[in-house]
Image (cartoon, rainbow, N blue to C red; front, side, top):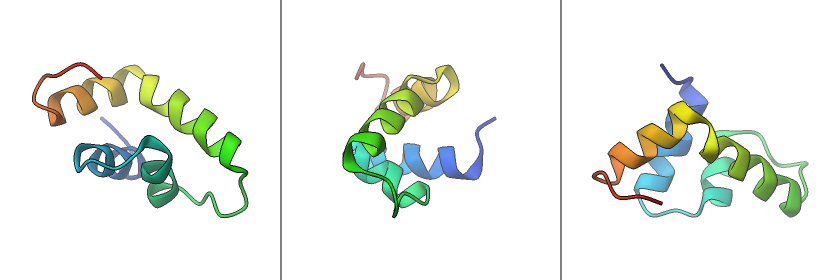
Length: 63
């Protein structure tokens, strides 16, 4: 089961948003540098449960 923030991240990506923008919408990243947002969003997208949910949301496509 994903947290509410992880679900929001997946939702934003499945709607075509970039992973950095999805992270910004799901988490409080207002004081984070762009590089840090990118690093954290990349880490989150690789999380096994998040990656599986993104894959399902995209209709089984890899990415």
